[in-house]
Every structure is written in C-alpha cells, then in structure tokens.
Image 1 (spheres, one colour):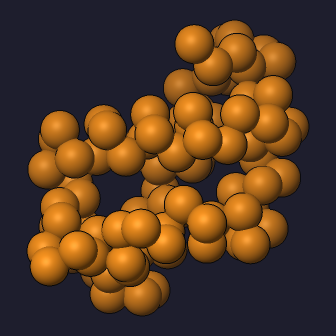
Image 2: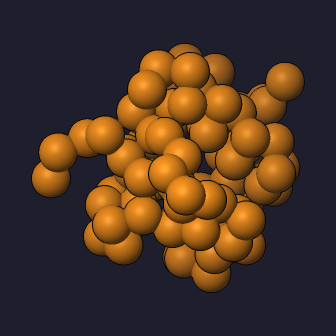
Amino acid sequence: MIRCINMGAKRSRWNYQDKITIYTLLMRKGFDRELFFDHLPETHWFKETVELYFSGQYRLMYDTIMKDFLNRGIVKTEDGMLVTTVKP
C-alpha cells in the first residue's frame, strides 16, 4: 500500500498523478509499453510528486496507476504501445 503524508489529501494527489500520466500519453500519441515507466522519472512532475507524497515508491505508483487505467479502459495496448482512450 502506498502511504501518503496527508491521508486526507490522498485522493487529490492520486487525481493529479492520474491526469499527468494521461497527459503524457496524449502528448506522445502513445508510448512504447516497455519504455514508458523508464520515461516517467525523467519528467519533473512524476519523480517530485512520488517522492513528496508517496515515499518514492515509483514502481508501485506506476503499476497501481496503469492497472487502474487498463481495467477502466482509460489506457489500452495497441501493437506494444500504450495509448489513451481519452480525447484531447
């Protein structure tokens, strides 16, 4: 389980991470499934937010978000690429 510093604000922080992750996919019109996790820490927002609010648990954070997105149909895999079903 990912621990958040302020449990009352946990959902809003998840929403922020969710939106930025989808935005990253939208800007690229998809991303290689095998490379996307390695790309996220290169962005300032992902590394900083996960360190500050989620104890630096990058892989757990990524896996949790992607599992949720895939289960809800927000993200899908096409020819080895992660793409979002959200319209820009």
